Amino acid sequence: MSLYAWVIVCTILGPFALSFDKKVHFYTHFRALFPAILIVAIAFLVWDEYFTIQKIWGFNDQYIFGNKLGHLPYEEVSFFLVVPFACVFVHEVLKAYFPKVKLKKFTHYFAFAFTLAGFSFGLMHMEQWYTASACIISALLTIGIYFVNRPAWYTQFIFTFLVAMIPFIIVNGILTGAVTDEPIVWYSEDHIMGPRIITIPIEDIFYNYCMLLPIVGLFELFSKRWNKQMPQ
Image (cartoon, rainbow, N blue to C red; front, side, top):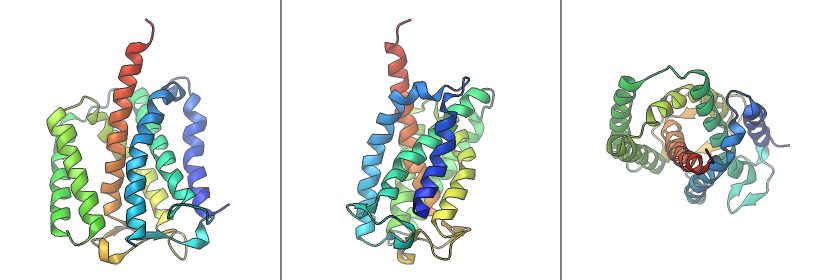
């Protein structure tokens, strides 16, 4: 099995095994979860495919199976299913075990700072496609979802996002070469700002935010609709 595949397996193993925890009972949310993941995954696979064709990023053949969907390794395709699954699992665990954690004031400051950073980085680096797209899209999503719609779940999402930064650094660190001679996923230096967290381009934080925010939003929406349909 390829190294990238091992990363995917290790990412999903714990969350899936613990999905049947009696307090979280995450498995009962699958009906709302899978459509949310698939809808966002389609958009991100299109984005991923285009950037791969343009050589904004790519994949090291020695760490993948070799089979591809278009220009994307199967491991990369599964990334957009497995990572969201694990992150929404974290979201539900935090709701179940830490219901009293409230970050309302922090959330407002975070959203404002994240939006400002997203627009600043994106507009200052318009020639770097990854920087511009990830940062500006994250800023626009925050404005549209938080500042315009003000959903109750956004505060919980920020708690989830901050906690998920720990496994994010581990997984993305492995993918970007923190423990290997060469990265599994490489980035063109022409399309990133340059600063990294260990080996992780800073843009990955905005990219993951762009992916997880709409997934959690759709998950919460579908869960609410599903609960209304349940017999009382």
